[in-house]
Amino acid sequence: MTVSVLFVCLGNICRSPTAHAVFEKVVSDAHLSDKIIVDSAGTGDWHIGEPPDHRASSVASRRGYPLDHLRARQVVTADFDKFDYILAMDNENLRNLQLMAPLGFSGHLGLFLAFDKGQQLEEVPDPYYGGPNGFDDVMDSIEKASSALLSHIQSSYGLP
Image (cartoon, rainbow, N blue to C red; front, side, top):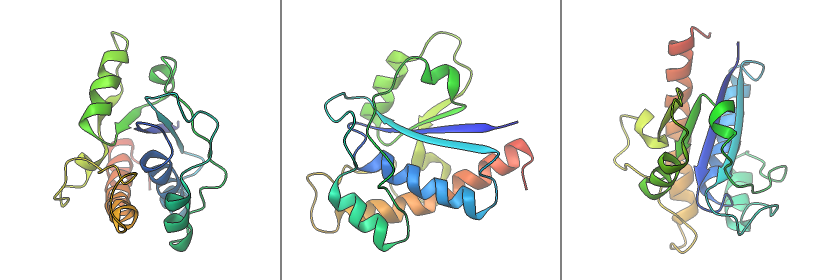
């Protein structure tokens, strides 16, 4: 039995690849890489094939999360068959995903930060045009929510 998680933002170059890398490491550290599959995508198509934004990569690298193996891709309808959790970074992307979701999708479609009850934010803010601390602030939120998401999956699926 495997559980699959897809993180989604707009262009798949900032928030969702950061969440992808952080959650991948959290899963690996818990020795669950054989049980939990992680991916990321964007609702937009203008960055397909590009690496993550250099600012996101820099912050991630400083904190021990490599992003260099990731390339942007766009969400496709088949993702709704493949993933148990499709987690949007913000409400705009959640609405776009809800419009794409096929009837009968039985997975969890929602906001990523909803798993961390201690978060003050509902959405992961887009750091692309943000200030100098934007990428660090996003990383802080993603790290906390990743631990909460893993705990949720462990308890929901009886994983150690």
